[in-house]
Length: 577
Ligand code: FRU
Image (cartoon, rainbow, N blue to C red; front, side, top):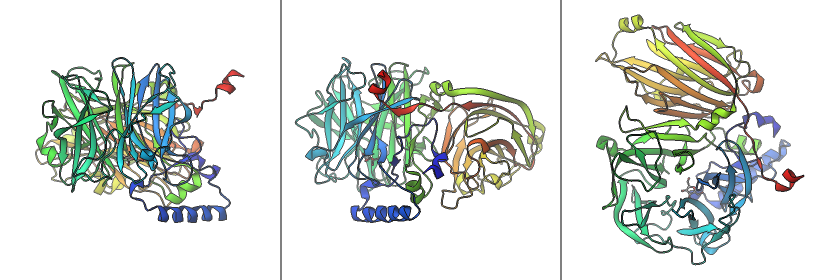
């Protein structure tokens, strides 16, 4: 397994030596999966590799902050290498960066979750009580909602959980398929003092968010109508609903409503495996959300991230007065490679989310400040002129674990002389960093080796439109990220709003096999997984590049080496001795 160990991340959360499965498990035929796993293990055996103690972890459950600890519950199969009977893994942290693995929080030991303890959410009541609602897949694969609570609320680690003896508390309502009713949200208060929550589903091909009210989390009444419905989007997983302040930078508790508050609905589309959100207005009386940008509502909204990013959730972090968004990041290598390396999937670095007051109805996402505690020494490069068609090495030493902040300015004279174009640029259908235009691409090559046999470009591409306005795209290109052939080679990205007074700016977190990038303060984000074979550990390098034909760009870059995070099993005996 050491053969592929460089792909393990050093400061992103992932379970110990186990593996996470990226299968869309719900729809998987068990026999086929068993056969597939058996074949893969047989092949591994041939190669003398082993997938010992393999465990499957997918997606996750409910994040929250309690008595000084952040709690992370995730979908975990302790019994085998395939997605099977999912239980809740559990880890705790003081700062969202360093983690201690704890014993399983809940296992599949009841008829109503015998087929899996699936995604749920925590609600912390005003008196401090913790309510956990989760989806159980029953012995007959019916999706029901169950209630659980801590056995000992005075234990800050919340190690033991009790399932409510009269579970399930909610069955699929009439007209809803029994396999399309899952992932309850955190509850919020109505002005009448009831708790309200939403559950994702679909009706024919229309994705929908059902609404329920409850006073005690044991009995529920269905609220007529739907929080949101968008035709053609299919099953909605992991619905998230939360308020954002249209005034301040602070986050809001789920129950906050009123003036200077907007609301966000996020859904994870099972059909295309991306997370979409829209900012809008919540009408409490009708339990209905209306997006600000009605044009956008023809579709489903904006993406949190244009790379690999799914089943995310937010929670209100009362200790820091912020709303934190956290996502599951799958793999884009082959299943064979996943078995060989013994794990699959990681968590992204948690992000603070706020409303982007300048650009309108969209959010800004930024890595939580705590990640900066991992910053070690830094190198600064100021006002480097990067000429058209050039690559400039940045001497930062090894470059497998970095935090990079960069700003770019296009030479004004050259910009004025550049002709207008009616070209519509799109990262995903472009030729990537190799395709040259007048005003782009330019940016950074991360996880590169000295010979540039491997590199991952993260860059801007600017087009001067027929109206004379500049349109900017932000992309991350996997095409030359690895000499391996069995890995994803796509170009991720999207357009990014750049306001008059803004320079082009980007923050990039590099961690062995993950590259998380945030353009224009987190207005457009792209997370990519890459699997270099040469640009690893001490051989990893960093370069600036400018592949535009017309303009010189001036770049200022600050680069920090990043420490590894402490992510280990919690062993009280050990720490006592
Ligand atoms: C998300 C999801 C949820 C479900 C869980 C099952 O991808 O499918 O809808 O609760 O994972 O593991």
